[in-house]
Length: 253
Image 1 (cartoon, one colour):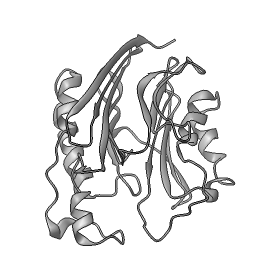
Image 2 (cartoon, rainbow, N blue to C red):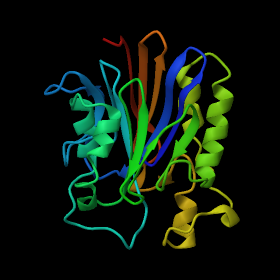
Image 3 (cartoon, one colour):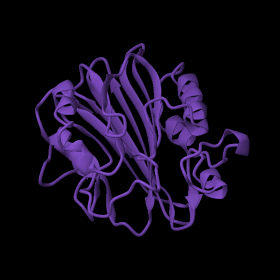
């Protein structure tokens, strides 16, 4: 994922609301979100190249999602897939806190990432570029290709939009529409991550339209206080057109 907006325990009647965009090369094969045949408890998209995922939930209410940490000068070609971290938490039974605490020893092997995990009771964020475990407090938060709540333009804009939608009854189409915003940030607000200014501009919108690289899918999730889970995902082609949608509703067990 490259942008995750979420409201954690801050909206009456809702435990968690998520709106997220996955940005990736369109040449990297992946499957749309579904329940995995080899792990039927997991509902997530799947990276066919490495077998992991970028965002998912389980029938028991576990949630995990990951973004890459953008630093062009700090990238190893021999690093393991970061998507395996999301899959590992979803398939496991450890608490969210125990899982992120266990990452310290292995995290250096991966390229830069920030990981969100929730066991339904608590949520934590861990980045191997800060090496600091953070418990996520109730509120509206945003995570892009840096640390949690770093005020990049897309994070600030997205969080404001999410907060506005949260004042109304949950409707997945409204959150899908929020993430379908391809307007880039103004130049003076662009972050400096080591890329040239034009690349920073292309990557500054909530939804990225940049040819062979861009937003591959938008995922929205709602988990109610009563244990009802609603998950919708829209996938895109490289020309920006919609290639499919899925919608799952279930009761947390």
